[in-house]
Amino acid sequence: MIDILGWAGTILFLVAYGLVSAKKAEGDSWLYQGLNIIAGTFLIINTIYLHAYPSAGLNIAWVGIAFLTLGRKIWMKN
Image (cartoon, rainbow, N blue to C red; front, side, top):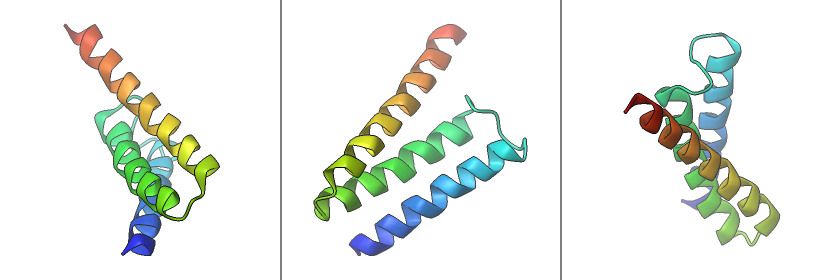
């Protein structure tokens, strides 16, 4: 199960990156940031379980940035 989460997170990160690179999604879009949050969360679980703490730290930061981006988007809308 832990490997499935790791692979799913990796695939979702690549899908998100591909969408932005192909100009199918904007870097601050709900789709892109949502995929980053889900993918990062899956990889946080995977890397903590495997004791890969530097990778876990990177993914925690990645998810944090995604939440900040969406928070700023909500704030600017109001």
